[in-house]
Length: 95
Image (tube, rainbow, N blue to C red; front, side, top):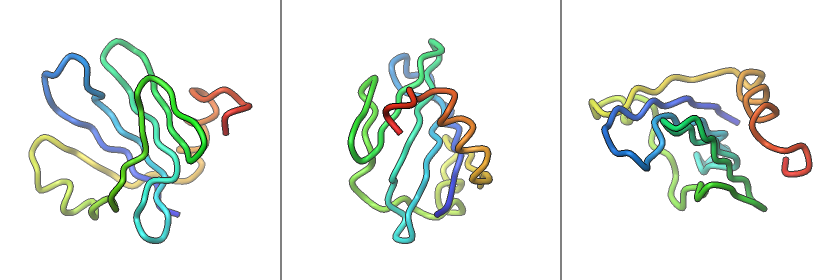
């Protein structure tokens, strides 16, 4: 698994400003958190979703490619960081 944290720099009111994803070996999202300006956090996994958050239908590009777009700033994060965020924002029954 790979874990990425991507800031999305934009002015859209209803779109997330941060996307944190767990990626499988083929770079498909298996779990995702979306953070909004309002403070709301949406989540998605293979079974459930909240706040309109959905797993992507395509493989996620490498961070080098994501970071070529000036609207995005992505970094790798440790599994422990992802898991801490997941536990904080996803009800225990939904993981």
